[in-house]
Image 1 (cartoon, rainbow, N blue to C red):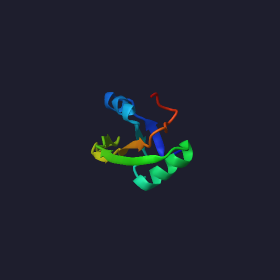
Image 2: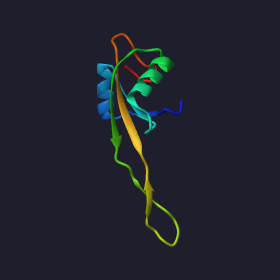
Image 3: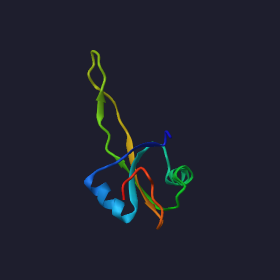
Image 4: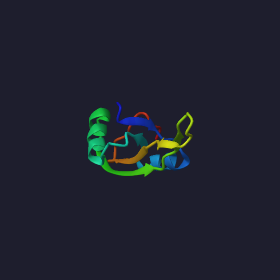
Length: 93
């Protein structure tokens, strides 16, 4: 379950639920093929397609004498389209 970080509930993602599309934050190292196989096995559904994009990271500061930027967070979001008559029970249709 480390692949799936959380479900995204925004105005756009709620609108996409009407088209059988689910928005998920996932592990940044995950590929579309890996995510498709994982979703099909875990939720017992058939995936029609996946769109993915990386979200801009936030800068993290390190405490200490040099307060320079030391890194950033990374996030990846995927929009999963399921075939007709399939749904993921975590989301409301």
